[in-house]
Image 1 (cartoon, rainbow, N blue to C red):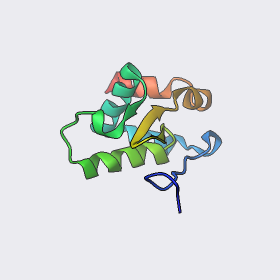
Image 2 (cartoon, one colour):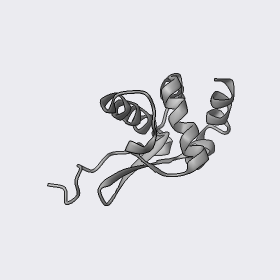
Image 3 (cartoon, rainbow, N blue to C red):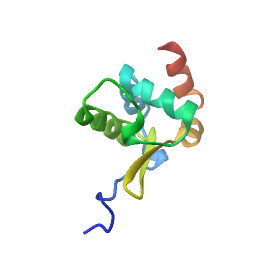
Image 4 (tube, helix red, strand yellow):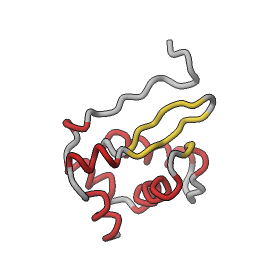
Length: 104
């Protein structure tokens, strides 16, 4: 049983991240907004994004981004934090995230 509030999360190794998964995850405008907020503000707790979606929907968006290898989630006290894996992704797919964000 985990010591913290939540069970540990799995994150794909960047070498196993597929470009199709990244593009599918970034096809959604809410998920692109999450990425933009993380780019401008840095790491943020899940409940601070202020997006007009239900908490369960937001949780689904975080899960999709995490499984696609775009963000990493970690627990900090009673908060689940989100951070971009942009350096890792740029190493695997140079400029892909920036190009997608600029286009939409």
